[in-house]
Image 1: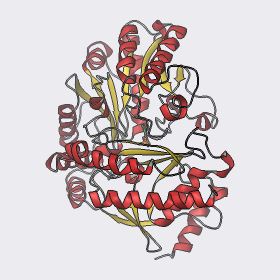
Image 2: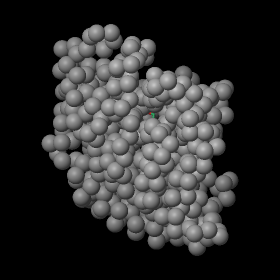
Image 3: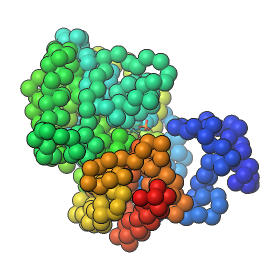
Image 4: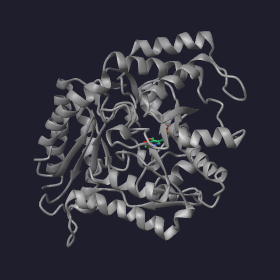
Length: 457
Ligand code: PLP
């Protein structure tokens, strides 16, 4: 088999992989991940690395689960492919739909399958616009989303997302999408001057921004608000507790649909099956993917609340929408088995009652570090804010790229931790053990020490 160097050369020559600056890749090349077990990945040079990100926030049951592999192989032998178009379906898709609706909040009784989270959010956009058109209000079509949000890489996904660098590439975004501020207490609340700035007041102020935008656009023009319960790729933004109740009230006041993007928060990440349940939300639609199959095979979907589902079904006729791989049998079989294992192993309650609180305690210790302005976590998602000055919250100069430096040092030390600017993020597999959380915290601390030393603080 080819050597690491040969693979890296082939990679550079032929492989355009996602979110990569190929010119900057240089001689060093990509790290080649070869195998994995539990919470560890291994690379082609013999390094074992604790995967603090569960791949891309998805390998919730950890690596090397034979039960999931067996579910895939059995289904591939039985029926490797058939579609769910027109009037056909197959057992894994039907059974998975039933199980998802059992786990979802009571008013959600239908699911539309997709191949990914991006496709789920494309589907959401079409569904909310179609819903209001069927209600005789086609002008009610604008979707409000949040700055810095990530909702996927399809054209609709990136348009719903609020990432300026993505909007700047590849031509005009989908029209009729607006963005408002995220409830980012550390970055936008804590150090701003002159107002009543408790986290609770800040959370309410962010909901007020939503209301003001609705008023500016006209409530008759606004179809839906889409947000993650806890914003993931935008920086593990855990909103103040006042935020969601206030947002819920605003949406109810103006009769605007709520879409929860549960692609990261779903399937136990916050210690509930869905992040919406943690915050007491009753979304009209929820997009799902990632942890649905623990990332073993690609599958996503939209969980559709009764209000929207009944209108689409009773008044809509055929919905001209769907993907070849909507509810793919092998992917659905793996997702079903994944849900079964999560229930049998009590994964969600363990995150809520044991692992989340334990991580919170250990993670908070990193908040004492000289270059950490805040350490926050909820369930098994966490963030560290890197700062040059703890008292004022002043950041390092952008040119220092402190976050990327810290991320690279983590990787060299044997930990995957992600950087979003100077916010360091973790989202480990939900089966991580206490001693592995200790290891994660120790490795993160080592990387922080080394980052501080290199930045001469
Ligand atoms: N929504 C959220 C919140 C995500 O984090 C992601 C992916 O990171 C997506 C949607 C897109 O999912 P996918 O990459 O499966 O298309």
